[in-house]
Image: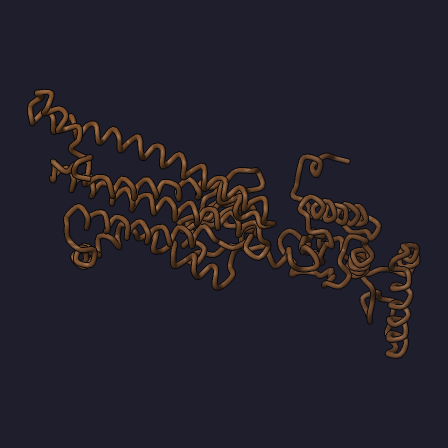
Length: 415
């Protein structure tokens, strides 16, 4: 080997070239030869690994090997062999330059650390893409775990590089950093908070990719499309993207609609306000008229019979309508709303269905529908709710009731 590395040097001396020039020309020629060898080795190794991976891809049912090729894992593996070859041949190239030999060796070692980190990152990205194709992992924050691992890997890599440059051992270099640990904690504060939050979010199953969340503080209302170590990305219904700090999910309150999506229906909870002065007792003639409304006809007949029996048994003086028990137009209307909602084809009959009267306000008496639509899709849900209230608002006048409205120009027109 010694003869080979000084072959050109000896030849140049025989030609009468100075010793100093012969050394530099010899080193330059060996360096050029090294580059050519590394290029050839890298090219050959890449072709071999590519053929091997493509052969595996065609023979296996799993698409993991295809994803590894897409993320350049084979390419990064191929670079390792030329790096090892370079590290072995550097002493031969720089045999007459000990200082540069050590510098180049340290440079190759640092590049080896970087190449290892690239390889690990590309493999983890391939693993992430593969896991996201599996139903069991589609909604898991895999990005957060990979980012945490890569942060520690980069820290170890940086420490190792500094240890190589300074010439001290890795453990000695790492322990010497204890004095600046407070600074490191301050620099990586958001990362640490995101890491802790990511673990808590996962353990408590607070949020998954694909969940619909509402976070008023950050103006987010849409589907979660990405969960990272530091941020959560939400695609709002207007297709804008809102970025939320991961630790905000455990420090602030937000709404996750997953429970609704997993249930049998989507809740309808809306009310309309009835004017107080339009509420009254129903006379016999008015009851006869309301019996023509089919869905509450049986209710009116049965209820009126019970009321008449009660008033008769207790000798109630019905010359005054207020005496005894009576039906009101508001009560009958509330029953109509409930019955209509129960019979609506788009309402889930296995979940709660209720029409209730809330406490009177300065804007009338709220009558609220509480039910669940069978179709949970937003557009269909809105259509169902609108369809129900279109009908109910139009039905108000049949019960001699009025919906409360704030005064407008039409209220002041003379008749």
